[in-house]
Length: 195
Length: 283
Image (cartoon, rainbow over the protein chains, first blue to last red):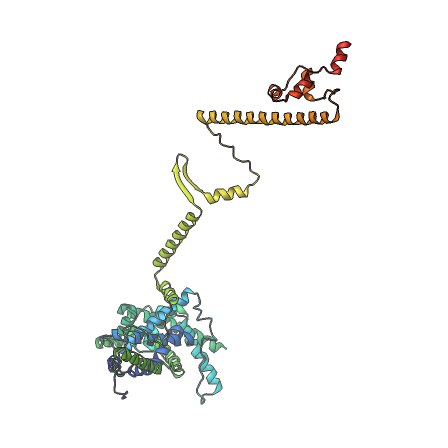
């Protein structure tokens, strides 16, 4: 099966026509990015993996409802964001949304490349952890827009469509999120400089 | 620089996001470029946002580099083939005629349980709906509880009154030393009174007859015993209560009837003068 030239929309058409491998190809293309998106919003590896799986399962179940009016990527993003919002609400209901406090278990400590010195590795890990912590500390509505913009590089209009909010709200939320992240990261940098 | 100093109070700060992400129109971009040359606050904020973006970008790159494979692609493909075979068997079609299921989950894909769906429904429901459902559930439980205790709610001269049978029985059980309630006096009709009087008279009569029979049988037994012990020519007067009663001039209420039923031999013995009486007369 040729994959590089085939668009997502063509794969959906094939899947609808009975190609058993077509939807699997869409999954291969998007699973890592959808996982990253979910991780950015949810902040926990386990939750992100479950949300990504649920996203593709929901997409597969509703494949016949895909009209082709939007891009497959936007459609998948919308499903993924809804999955993440659902999980966030569940977590809030269970009062388990302690993303700030969680540093072990669900939070993945990524390994640095081998050519980076241990001191830089540690510094990089700390910085990454600071970013993760700063993003996770954002209110959910701010976290969603900043992740959709920074991770998926969606346009303002695509974010507005995915979240079903006005364009002006997207801009104001993005501005607020950037300001809060700036303050948190600068505070972290100041503390790191003192140490 | 503290947080207050970092606040961008520029009136054009709202335009900064579109400029920063490259989504401003050409005219907006040119206008904002001119503004930036004169506004240090916006320049500072723009530079800071660049640093934020760089940091978030590094984090994203790390996430993508270590994103786990979900291994869903093969699962979907296998499931789709299985679905196609299933459809083909049922429709008598060849194995290539795969049709994407219409909003239906395939067999190997995880299905949500009813409990999970219900939990999700409540989780995602707005607060007013959850509050309404909770209130309705409470009302149903309260009504069920009232039905169980057989509650009675009434409005009379004394105001609103609420009582339950369960409560009354519980109150009685909890206060065993309490005085019992006074008995209610039953009212009888004249016919019932007459019937009761007749029943009482019949019972009295029966009691009298029984008592007389007992006296007769006891007297007969005594006479028979005396007759066996004494010769017939010199009979001893039996010292029976009956004799004493006759001496006293008093007779039991049933004496006449009992005397009538006595045998003739017994009457003859009574007619014989007693030694005690003769002695008294002689003195």
